[in-house]
Image (cartoon, rainbow, N blue to C red; front, side, top):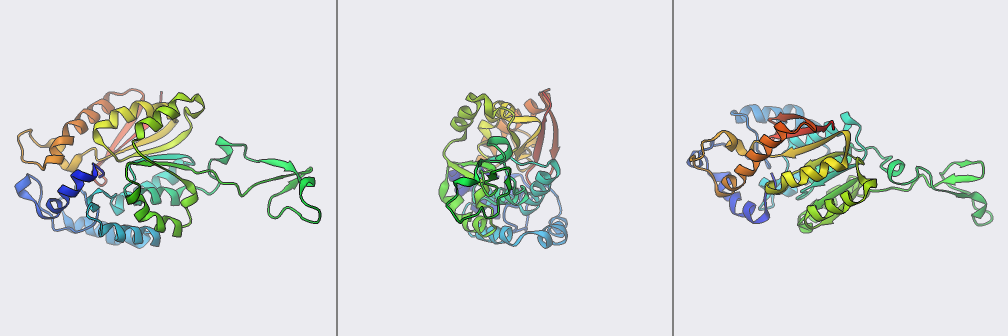
Length: 302
């Protein structure tokens, strides 16, 4: 539910304490990143206890617990949504992905754990970087790589599979030890700063067009449509873009004069415009799901 660090810091105490006074359901649930739109806390807890926590990797559990101590913890992806993303990556067979908005990296870790180890070597570099084995020092043999007709491949070469962007490296580094412990840090290329300039650079090079299998966007809602236009060039035909927070705390169905927290009201109109635009965009097929705070999946078809 990433918004901005400033807004999140101001909203965190209210998120935990406020209820009906803000025109929203009062909840007793203390789950970090809890944005479930279910009316029953007990039902949500049942989902977590029965299907999510028993299968949550230890590294993700540790990162979730670290994030719980951070003052902006409402920005994190919920555990059930992390499980959903992990499954989705596997279902579509993604190998190269992008994440805009990282925070401490819970959803990033869920993605990295799901990606296969073969990475993007086959798509961004030659799947085999070859050299004559005769160039090895005398008496040494290639260890591990296959020797085939006088050549060996550097099969242990890794290329980052996830381009991850966030304006705050400090938050990312809070979760980085968990990512490293999970053995997937080599899959991530983290860039600190605004995402739009990076996307513009990628779009400028036609070799990047259609090169990403999946993109997850959980960042500044006022830029979602700007991201969308660029991402449609970068995601392959049949690839997916996932936009987080598209039900925005349920505020999308509230009347305009309903009481809302300031940051909810500020971004609500951007979310409403986004939802209307995605529904009318014939370049994608869409599916809006009530997972977490609402996730809209867009499958590029044109």
